[in-house]
Amino acid sequence: MMKNDVILFFIIFTSCTSNPFWDDPNRTEMKISGQVIAENNVTDVPVSIWLETLDLFTITDSNGNFSIPIANSQTVEGNLNGPLKLYFYIHNYALDSVTIYFTNGLFSREQIDFFDSGKLINSKILKKIMSGNLLLNFNKNILENNDTLKVIVNLNFHNDASLESYKYIYHGDGSDFHSGLFFRNILNNEIILNQFIGQDSYGNNIKDQLVVIDYNKNETVTWIYQINTDSLNIIQGEYEVLPYILVNQNGLPSGMKDALGGDSLFMRHDNYLDLPFDFSPDTLVFN
Image 1: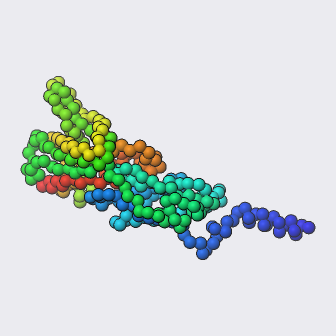
Image 2: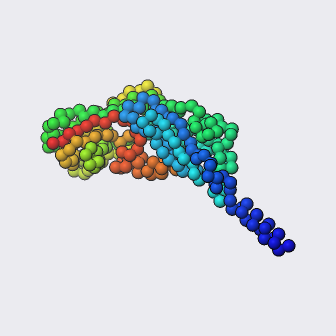
Image 3: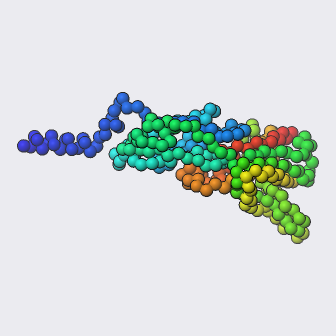
C-alpha cells in the first residue's frame, strides 16, 4: 500500500511541475515576424516594434523585415492566453498595431493579422504624418561675433497634426520665432543644444517657451529659427543640425516609451536625437 502511495505522489508532483512544451527538444522556436514599410521614408529610419505584456522590442532591418523570438509565454506561473498587441512606431508616422492571439502559451490557430506560425499575413504600411527638412540660411564659412543667423525648417503635413516646439516671443520688440536647435558632432557624437535668449529693456533675460501648434492635412509651413553666434558654443568640426519638434500622438503605450529609452526622448534633451524620426537635417562645417 505504501509503495502505491509513493508512485501516486510521484505522478502528481511531476504533472504539476513539468510541461511537455518546455522540455520538448524538437519544439520549433516561436517567433513573431513580418515586414513593416514606412511610406516615403527619406532617411531610411527603421521602424520600432514593441510587443505588450511580454515587453519585447526590436527594429526593422533595411528591408523592413523583423523577427521577435518568443521565449517566455509558458512559465511555471502559468501560460499566456488571449490577445496581445504589437505596436509599430516612427515619431512622425501614425502609430499602428496588429493583434496576435495566444492559447496555452502557443500561437492560437485562429488569427486575424497573422498565420498560426506567427508570421504577419500582409506587410504593414505606416502612414506619414509630416515630412520636414532644415536649411541653414547663412554663409556657413563666415560666422562673425554677435551675428544673428537664420535657420529655416520646412514642414509638409500629410495628415492632421499637433506639434510641440519652442518659440522666442517678446512683445517689446515684436520678436516671434522658433528656438531650440541641436548640433550633433558627426565625429564624436557630442550634442550641443542652442536656445535663443534675449533681454528686455531692463536687461532681464527672456527665454523661449513651449508652444503647441495644430496643423491640417496638406498644409505646408516654414518655421524661422534664429541663432546668436555668441551663444553658439561649438568647437571645430562637422555638425548635423536638427530642430526639436514633438509630434503628439495619442495611444503610445508607456511600455513602448520605456523600451525606446524613456520620457527624456520626448523632451528637449540630448536623448531626443535617439527618437526614431524621419527628418532631413542640414550640415554645418565649423573651422
